[in-house]
Image 1 (cartoon, rainbow, N blue to C red):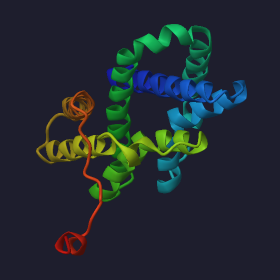
Image 2: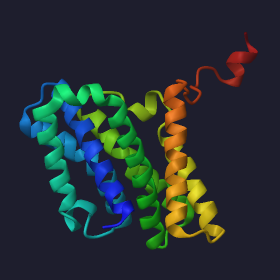
Image 3: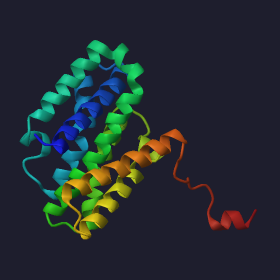
Length: 209
């Protein structure tokens, strides 16, 4: 079992816990919590695989994802009061998972001979759309549409990966560097409350003031 796979499983666990916590706060029953945790953890990768017609779909081809989600849900139910104070630790796992999912999705897109730009979008889809589906199903405005630099960090890490790949940097080293870029951007954005600009006025509105 290599380091990248271990990080993938840790990211899946963190995403599943975040989904389970949201569902629990919404007073969902056990089945609802399981579904939201599942969608959060593997929804992005599943959507990616459906878009590029990749089979078997991520969690179908590797039952460890399902086992990880189940363990995450049970852990959340049993230790919710202990997990909540560990928000910084969970944020770190979640952020590492974000970077790993981005790069795994990007690499899978490239392995299917997609154009690098499309593969980059597939990487971002892998990383963020589980959270989007979670928020939609729990009647929230998706985080990536409202605040915080989230998807942009994925795109930045993916671009770094593609640049280093074109320079023939060792793949595993390239992977770690690109994931680090995602983590650093995400941590800085949250620490300093950085957000992408919002559209408020157009050029005509400003000119009339």
